[in-house]
Length: 231
Image 1 (tube, rainbow, N blue to C red):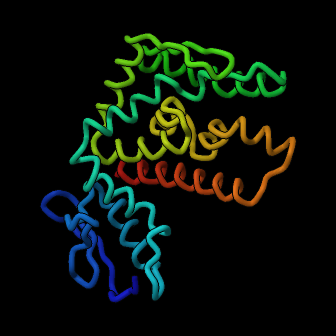
Image 2: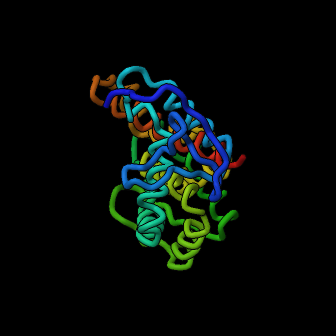
Image 3: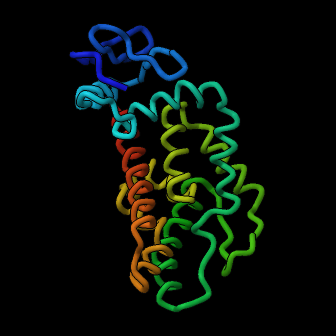
């Protein structure tokens, strides 16, 4: 898609803050006006559009993508999004530990157990840990507590939480990011312990490197989106 606009701006609108291209409101793929709750987020989205050259590259506009997803998908299918995100707690990455080698076991314990302990205290939701890949049942009360926590997020924050959860493979890590306990780099590192261990031992091919870079970008975008929503 070619760039056909000259000026971008963020302006207050009735429902919050809108983004305008040559005075016209920016719209989502579903043709809704792209309106966000905070001025800082609207300005950052306008900056993404302003940074585009002659060809518009959607992959270089992660904040725009998250905002559009919040409006076009999360707001419309909120219950499904909440359920999809909350379901990660049932098989959360941080609950599944390696049996060997000892160095990997120690690395997982050091990174993941403090997060499990934090989540148990923060949300009154303890999680059972197991060695190996076979599923282990989690407490219904804990799963209910995690679901209630996810449901407490508004549409925009829920969208960022969903993106972070999918990228990390862990609701616990994503919540730690959303709560500011972990920054994006730490969340990525925690979610990639197994992969990083293998890379250190055997190296990394170009395809795996690209995949990991995309996941890191998704986590950073979710973090920045949440920060900009704060005002």
